[in-house]
Length: 309
Image 1 (cartoon, helix red, strand yellow):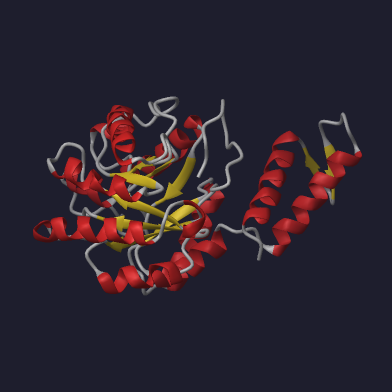
Image 2 (cartoon, rainbow, N blue to C red):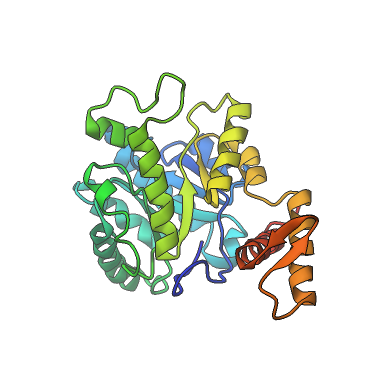
C-alpha cells in the first residue's frame, strides 16, 4: 500500500494492492491454498468468518501461518494481513498475539473514527518492541463504514498515524447497525446511504493520502457481475478490491491492472507533454489535455511497472 506524503500516493514497494482475499484463519484447507490464489494480499480472518467458539484456535493457526512464511523476502510478493475483532471487544487484544508473526498489516473492523487507529497504533508500538518486530512495520487498514458514527468521521484520517495504509468500506454491517432489512434498492443498486458510505470512504482515503479499497462482491458465482462491479470501482477511483473467494481474484486483478489500450494512450499522453515542455494544455487525437490528464497517465504507467501483464 502507500506511505503517507503531503497528499496523494507516495512511492512504496508494496503499493498498491489490487486484490485482498479473506481467508478464515481456522481453516487449514483454505490457508494451505492461499499463496496459490494470485491475490496480492491475504487477510487471515479472526472476526466474521470464524465462530466465537473457535477464535482461540484461529489465533494459533494464524500465528503459525505467519511464522511459516517469514516476513520480508520470504513472503515473496504476497502480503499477509490479519483482521482482528473490534477494539471495543475483549477479543481484540487477544487477537494481537499475531504480532509475533510480523503480519504486514492489521484490518480493523467496526471503527468509529481515526481515534481507533491511534489506539491500535499505540498497542502495536508496544507489541512490536516486545516481539522483536521492526518498529512501525505493521500497517493498519480500517473497515471505515460499519457503524452509524463512522459515516460522520471519514474525513478524520489524514495524519492520524503513519501506519495507516488504506481505507475500505462495507455495506453489510452498516445496514445492520442502521436497522435496515436490506442495503439494496429494488433495482439491485445500493440505496443512497450506502452509496454515500462508498463515496465518503473513497474521498477520505484520498484526503489521507492512502489507498482506497473497494468492498466485496458477495455473489462469488457471478463472475460477470464481479467484473462489472470491479471495473466500475476503478472508474470511481478505487485502486483495489476485497475478495471473499479465490475464484474472484483473477477478475479483480484484471480490473485494477492497466489494459493494453490504457497503456498505449497513457504513453502517448506522457510523450506528448514531454515533447512540449512548459505547455499546460496540448491536443491529442481531437482531445484537449491538461495537467490532470498527465497525472492520470503517469499513474497508469507506474501501475503497469508494478504489475506487468
